[in-house]
Length: 339
Image 1 (cartoon, helix red, strand yellow):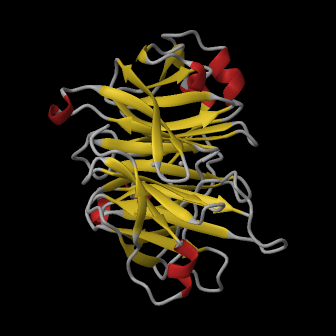
Image 2 (image 1 turned 30 degrees about the vertical axis):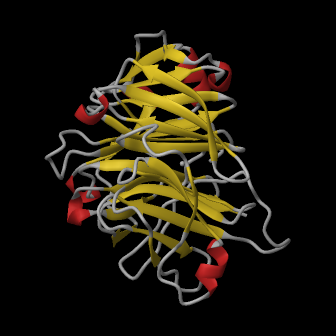
């Protein structure tokens, strides 16, 4: 599940909470602090917005033109929400968001899109400046081809700059200092593509791939440059509602650099949240809030979808209960912006 690509998270509702990711466009009103959560769903045809600094934060729901969306971002400069539509197989832009938010609107109007059919079965987006990276996950409809596509946001829509074919199944991505870290789905691995935006079109080979000891199947990924912390989620077995988890790797740059390609990051280098009390079954996206050091998760299986928040783990492993939990049908993507 976001982005100078420091996915972060936070949420609060009556039963509730929120999830987040940090943003590199801070062009709001001077002195006006903001902490805002955006989420997408793959079942409801809606996105949600929550002002987390409100006295009683409540999610506001807007209908969009895609029943199934995975990946969401808010551009403050353009005042627009971008989603990856799995229904229409394109990027979709919903502009004039603040006007909709301040009115009684319950739906958003699409104002731009990418060309339909550049990708199918999207799983995540990452935004760096005016570039949007889209993950295509392998499926029968796309000939079981995994891709990373790079778009440039233009005044009228999107220009497809590059298309990369990747030799492993993809899910979450995050970008730091021009390097793209990708989840290797169906495994315990993560991979990095250094100087990603300068790579030539075509087949993309990872510069390094490492395993995470004790992790079954990676999905969500969030990296904080500020704290040098990598947060990963483990969905375990897809049908199990109790075997999911969160893995935190501190001092990540050093740990990753000192691990040989094909090697493993040991349990001794991790802090973990696993167990039935956590409500983690299929955590598909994750966010990390650098100011509070809380972790926010889009849990897709339990309750048909929940947003969960957790205190930062301080031990090697614990079955920590969520600090907050909010039902959100089909929740798949989480984006938090701070200002």
